Length: 247
Length: 247
DNA sequence: GTCCAATTGTCTAGAATCAGACCATTGAAG
DNA sequence: CTTCAATGGTCTGATTCTAGACAATTGGAC
Figure 1 (cartoon, each protein chain N blue to C red):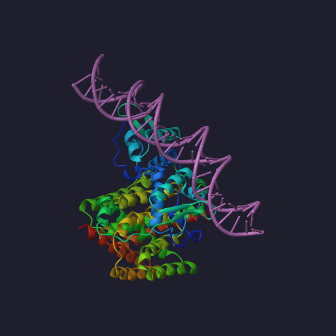
Figure 2: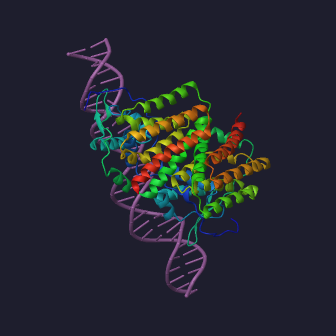
């Protein structure tokens, strides 16, 4: 071609040459469904979409999906019923955290991985809030955001985490960007197990409520900088809480 | 279980039940490698890592990787040589954009998809800059950032895009979060083809240089809000440019 | 010139995954 | 009480992907 027969052994390709696939389809599917359940995207008593539809949405074959569903059924997360009006029903309630849960969850994760997840979440959620605050919101969108905020505020303790998640995800989804919504969902689920291992305490909830209100206000005000700052403060609180349990 | 034999047909699972895999391993691998080449992560004349190592990094078998490499070789992107000091060498130079390239690239993408990509990029890059500005930077990190900035500024036109990419990605990678770096790389490659279809013009470069400097300054100053704002302005310019060609 | 190490090239057996057809069960509607 | 539509359950053959062993090529070191 030209005068470069064999240059240096390539400097540092890194981030682009990351894994194309995280694992096999079965494992990834189990993980996804499990997170959908734990995140409360499909609540207790509700059912997953029909197998054929779900398989199509997840981009996998029905056989693989069924294996995953079966695994979750055997693990006690789902109750599968056949016949019309049948389906895979969610049979799972987030257990109250017990002492030692957090440490156990952490050993499954590793410190670097935790930092990675927290940083990632900080970036994408701040970014999403910023984008949304820049957007011209329709009345409907404003209502949705307010509604989610109200729902967190009068949540029963058992339902708190679920509504908190719904609030955070709503911000991402309201931007209208599926990619961004997916990134935020992904970021959140990487810390779900850890957050679920922390008891939901009154003072924390009150603190969070103030911050949630500030986030919503900044977005509704159309103030990107304030929105980013508010999310950053909120997430920094959570991160500090987690790091605190580590030390 | 309890008194919920068949509740409503599930409200809106959405973003969590997105595809588990984008396509087959072969296609995804081709796409990845192609983007690594187009993004200049592996520059002209350099070679990809050895097959065994690359396969391991990408999490696929060597057979699948080889198929992908072969496809890129036949498409004229790579030159594969065997024996010691052999490898898959990049034989590709970004072609000067010709009229109609942009429109062609756009028809392959769709308007919604473009908006999605632009929004996603805006969020993750703003978030990354914000996070980095919050971080206590080591002298080495500060130097890296300054170096990337300087490299963009005295780039030859043919090398401009590549160094621009390196600057933007450096921000994400300096946060130390692989997830965030991957997200930014992903965001960028979703608009590469479009940007490559736009000629690199003097005035745009000068404008971008000022904005790049502002971004770096805000980060080095440790001012998250300013960093986020600077990135937002910069990307808004690019986005406007693209949208302009659409109308 | 011989040897050696790094690299791509080839083959095979087996597992995972897929697409699609067909069966079985259920509960509601008529 | 029969029918029917929606759903999970099962089977099969084709395709893709994997893991690993082994062969061939190349160019430098000695």
